[in-house]
Amino acid sequence: MVKINCRRVDGVTVVDVVGRITLGDGSTLLRDTIRGLIAAGDKQILVNLGEVGYIDSSGLGELVSAFTAVRAEGGDLKLLHLTRKVHDLLQITKLYTVFDIHDDEAQAISSYEVRHAH
Image (cartoon, rainbow, N blue to C red; front, top):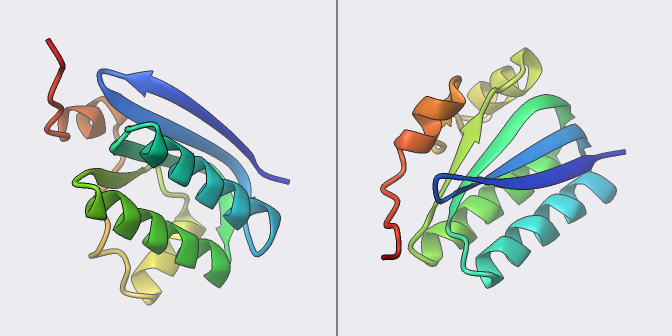
């Protein structure tokens, strides 16, 4: 079972994921969430994986495709708070270098070039 909650912080959408991102439920929910954000015009997305203990290849695929989709719209998708297992998995799969990964939320938020509407 996976739960996803979205919140906005200084123009960045933080996507808090709790549970396992695996084939079926988790990866589908993640995909739908990210696609929904892009459709709504949210292009600065920070995915908080602090409560994600496990991601399978399907979940990784969704992260990569979400990253690509956001980039295609001129936005940025970054990762926050990787657990040890997820960190190791990203290193093994060489995806660690693809994503901009942060340990501190405030620092991650300020790393975006957010254009505030006036």
